[in-house]
Image (cartoon, rainbow, N blue to C red; front, side, top):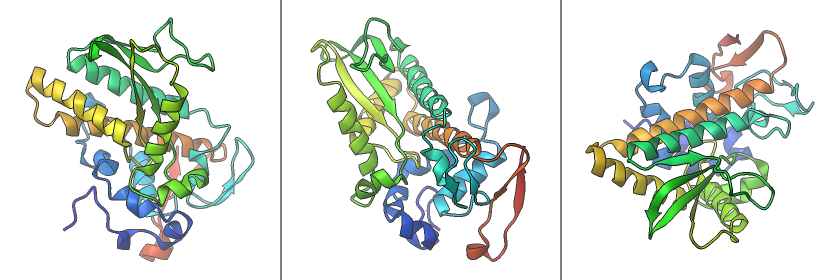
Length: 274
């Protein structure tokens, strides 16, 4: 029996592997399936609705998500895999996914006894936007931590060369872009990017940040499973965001999503998206 978070390549849809050959590598990173390990507890914010689970599983297995249609936001043609919604230039739900990831980090820092603030005033990027968050006390070497999150699409055509290179390469590329963006930060600040791919893979700097945060939580609270819990919360936030983006590209009114691919299973079932 394979662990739930690791899917061998034989389980992946050949159609998706042909269009995105790096998918197999992405799914072999353990963190990419953290949401599958989360207990569906309402009070912890880990309960995913049926549609989110269906779409999350379909994205991992390369199954059809929707009927081929025209994106209602930009007019582009969308195939049955529904991947266009994750990168649609006119989609605005990516901000919600981005904010959800930052909120998870903010709460995790609080659990570690570290005060932090989101979108700190007095600091701005070269483009005039605020940074995502900053600790109010020193994080390392007497410097406060400044972080900026990003969720690159693992299956985007623009990232294909990175996706086929190595596991987590898309997230690592996104981290390097963030580092280049913040080269002019004051030396009194410690910057770390947080890059989580749409399929859940982490970049090396992001993984280091999460494990460093985990050590502090374990030291303060004695929780041995804090890493798993933090990864699960981040993964759940990304999955909810993915679902919102895909649903935004669907036509208005009652829509249908295919939750089983007839080409793979021999039978398909349709469910309305309310």
